[in-house]
Image (tube, rainbow, N blue to C red; front, side, top):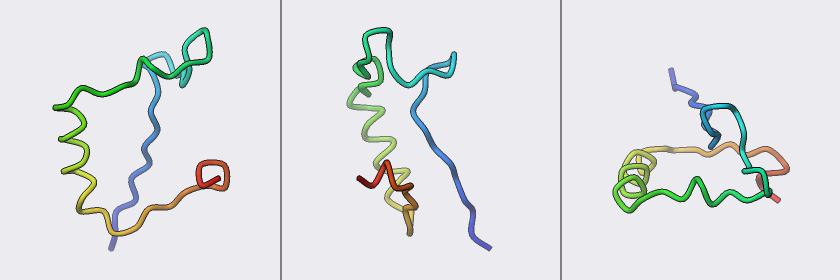
Length: 54
C-alpha cells in the first residue's frame, strides 16, 4: 500500500506569510534545497488542489 504525505510550508506558529504578505522567510539554503530535492526524487505522484495548480 502506498503512503500519502501531506506537506505545506508554514512557520512554527502556523503562518504561511509574514506580516507584510511575503514568503521570503521560507527561502531554503542550498543544503536544505538539495536535501528536499533528493527526498522528492522518489515521489511517483503529486496531488495538487485547484488553487495550487493554478
